[in-house]
Amino acid sequence: MRTIFERPKTLINKPFTYCPGCHHGLAQRLIAEVIDELDIAGKTIGVGPVGCSVYIYEFFDLDFVMGAHGRAPAVATGIKRSLPDRIVFSYQGDGDIAAIGTAEIVHCANRGELITSFFINNAVFGMTGGQMAPTTLPGQKTTTSPLGRNTEVQGFPFKLGEMLARAEGSAYIARVALTNPRLIGQAKRCIKKAFLTQIEKKGFALVEILSPCPTNWGMTPPEAVQWVEEKMIPYFPLGEIKVKEDSSHAS
Image: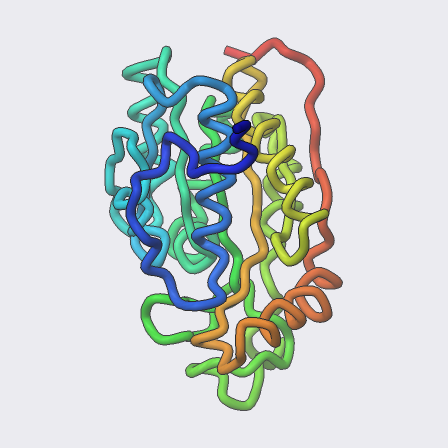
């Protein structure tokens, strides 16, 4: 009998412990599938920071390093420069990569570091109680913006992908969502392109993944998926934001 679906070899046989309706598990499965398909597990090193994304090391059969809050791109840079033959990726939430870690990711992209970053955007600080994040939408209620985000006071949601696309060293920037099978397929193709960007030495790559957080949004999982489609995607448009075709990496 032919097997048509199974657990990726790169994933440990352990149940995910994320909240019901969270898309961290689905995002990590896609990353694992791509690593298997590219046959790079033996030379891949992941970097996790602080936040819900820190648990990634529990589910992957890979070498992992834990970085301080926001510093995963700096840690990944050190690993890649020390071990240039390895494939190095960071996996970060919006509170980590777009708040305390803004400087690290901006300069990492500008330098064109040969790493791949995955950015889970659920519009709140998930692990610490659902506080307002740089990606919280206008009018969105959180524990620290109970009346809704007021852009006159707190500014506008941070479109990190568009900003990093302006950096000379960035080679591939994409934004995806996982709310239906078609978008899941697109997301996997973008994840593979991001890894290939590193393998082909084109420059820095980042894939932003819009993800629901039903627990902190106070919604059921179906309601949260609908909210991503109706509220987040219009503000954070999906697609490839930057694709650098030149295969030569500036030194």
